[in-house]
Length: 311
Image (cartoon, rainbow, N blue to C red; front, side, top):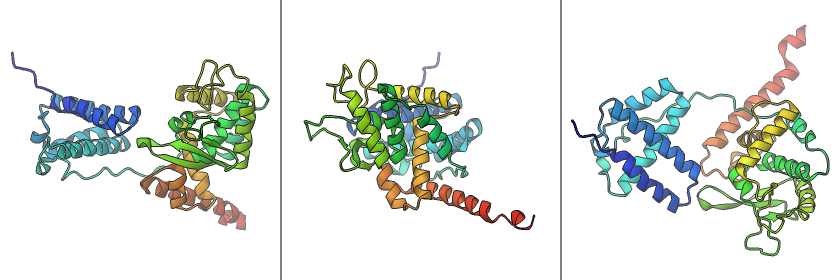
């Protein structure tokens, strides 16, 4: 029997994962990288292509990305392209792959057609907040969470990582008097994100209810019945509130889209948006800038639609 091929790429993915963990990359980010390498390795094996990086060619990568575009979408193929580029660059930095053998050198990035970014409108947000009326612990917490997500588009990982330790300034993340929250971003960076008056008021009302929670001694800002409120808990809460408000497909990242869109429509610059949302690249800010410009154009058209002027 022929000897099975050693999956060189998968073995080195394990080492890369350790490197990523050492640099404080999130488990979700590492899982996405691993997914790409797993799919790529499987495709190479199925199509009798080499599994060792130094033997791969740009044609192998291009064929894989074309297959991914057909089987999935240009967006998914673009993610795979970025993940493969990061992986092979790491191999070069680690001297596991000669620079001239990097198969990504002659592979062009995937062009993804622009699509309207899904966002919540004001009526939908109002409907969600309406489901949180009342003085119960859950209502106060959920209203504060929704307004926090809306005000600055914080990622759910940053949201649930907020700490409430007023007696320890080194770890305390909630500064209502200054209108800011200290959030940990991808890679372990920290930043102060702004909140508005309504959000600060909602958090204050939640904190007063939090005092009587049996787990109030814990440092996590957001608490559930058994302890810290998790990212999964936030997602489940939003789905439950969305059902009550009769809105479909509500999830934490939708608020990131909505916050960025509304801030751009309100006139904030791309640089402002990058600072608030924690982006290091201006690519996403530019994308929301285009979305906001289209929204402003549609609103202006409604005021002066030619057909309306002559009908």
